[in-house]
Length: 458
Image (cartoon, rainbow, N blue to C red; front, top):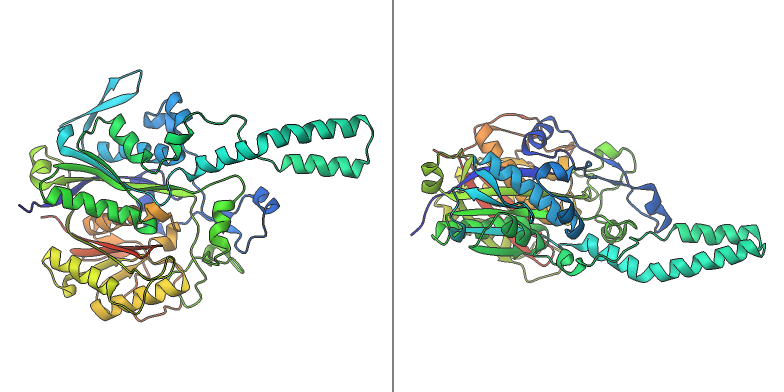
């Protein structure tokens, strides 16, 4: 039994907007959020790239997250919980507090046994892992160094030597307390588990780890579960948070030379599919959540329908841990399988939201595959050209963009695309477009390839 599957709600937290409406408006205006990396990071490494896209300050209390949850949750879980609340409300679900002490909620209109949580994340609670590691490594050393400094000052050691010790002490950044909830905070499945616990979801609670394809893989599996009558509704998407006080996570990509270089102008450094591209814009984090339902279930409760999901496919390159395989047919096979599952031909696709990172090899391979399969007909853009790369959250955020592009018959530009590497129908100006069928695809370290096919609901 194959059922029709629709998107009825969305939630977004990103560097350019903390809700779907704000995010979408920033996309349409081509407004990015690019800043210099934190100054103190430069104490710990010589960075090739000096720019990133940080998250705005987030008031988690306004998202029904209490003091206890703030203390025992990694930022990935906090981002996911905050975004789910927006998605449920936009889907016209009524949320009622069930247990004040535990701050848990009941969602009216959901059979909890027929609902599932499907969340993708590339790494999970790596920020908490970094904090705990810093505490374990530095706390006692910091105390010992403090004693040495006091002795040196008392015995009138050379002032230059004392100053060096003080400067060294100042470079030791760590939380003063090892978090007792560290294990549950670090677990990659924590965002999905916290959603299921907070909203009383008892169907399944699954986490998908497929690097930068994690969000797309999670949504694809949620789609299949509803299509095949395993569930009536799914809370699905992707989340990532990639910050540490030493800039080590940023530096791990920097040493790979995968990040956009800001040699001349930081606003123009991020330029997917352009001949002058130099890498991707690193985003501190983000989350995209979709409420996906069986169509009959959605109609029965008079839910708003944004778009319909009609196909999904994924393949594995089995080639290289960090590089796309441009020689074999694994990416084309994925696309053709998704189209076959959707019941349409390639010439029906009006719009493609690409992976579009801005890295040298990936953009070349992706654009070539698009040209070979779709020619120059469909609109092509890269959400990362505006937002930057949110890693495991990117595919989910781009699925939201694809659904909104269909619903609103408009989409954002592919930013900073002055000299395209291929003669495709890139969106060079935001405007009105007739978009009925669309495809969004993601690729991840490890050889993960995944794509979704969406259509206009009628």
